Length: 143
Image 1 (cartoon, helix red, strand yellow):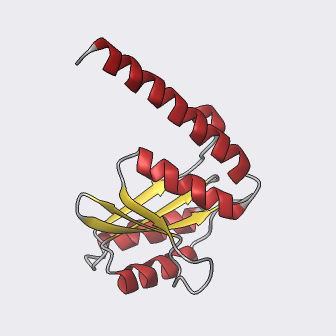
Image 2 (cartoon, rainbow, N blue to C red):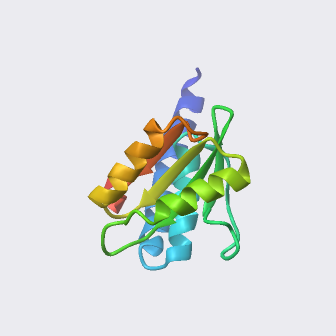
């Protein structure tokens, strides 16, 4: 790899991190901007064909993405308190409708114990959901 290409990649990566940090700061004030941040974050972390869904009538999916050939449905929750277990029903319904085999929760906060238990049960059930992704406690210091 040439030196100039290496410098370009380092500078591009720094700029990308700054852009994500700026988007997060706006997103922590606005739930729809938080979805946009989540979309960009997922792209940066190996997900492909990442897109947000409509704001209503999305069947419980906020983001649809691909990872290693599988479709993944994400619920994005910007919360001031823990995320509760009612999101599991929406995730499962959305996964079925979108043909996904993986689901995920993306939040700036923690998951309740009951939600953690529901997600563990979902993984163990042997149903069509093969993997559960949890991305939580997102904050600007990460970047």
